[in-house]
Image (cartoon, rainbow, N blue to C red; front, top):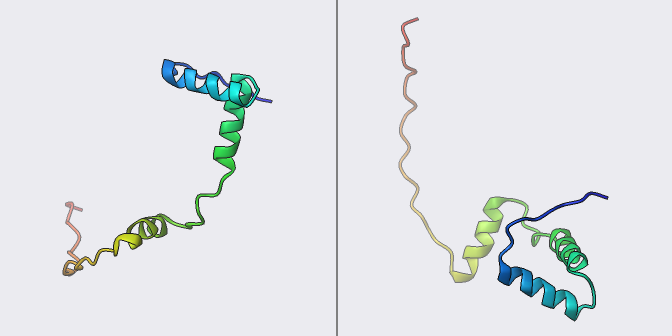
Length: 82
């Protein structure tokens, strides 16, 4: 098993962790392990790409239609003096 040290935790956050651990009848260390385990074992909602993730957030508010900018012809490459 690996060991991890977390420094510079806000006092209020540490107090909330202590209370949550007490509510569950375990140590703060065990509570932190459980929080990490549950947060990292969840699936991200099934979105396979960034595009799908953005679309799923915008769709409920009706989406957005954007006009595509006109395309220009490809420029000739610069002559670098060769």
